Length: 98
Image (cartoon, rainbow, N blue to C red; front, side):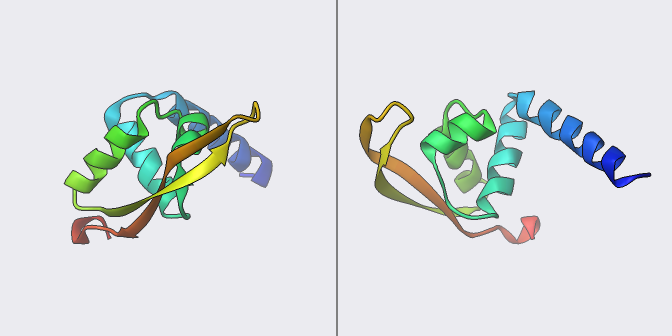
């Protein structure tokens, strides 16, 4: 298979997964993204299609993931400043996930 076909298949897979709004799909997207680094509430909503990031973080914590929350100040795309926006950082995973 050519690299272009592989890339096209991967893009289709990512699009179909981002449209899946089931809790399991949202949790899977969230943990995959947290493994890459910290993410704030706005980014999780916009890029991961997660409507309630705080609820998904609660799910992940209950599943044994250790996720720290820091409160930050962000400016949105319309220039409005928001104080106390959550910034999530994955600190450790449950042994079953590793």
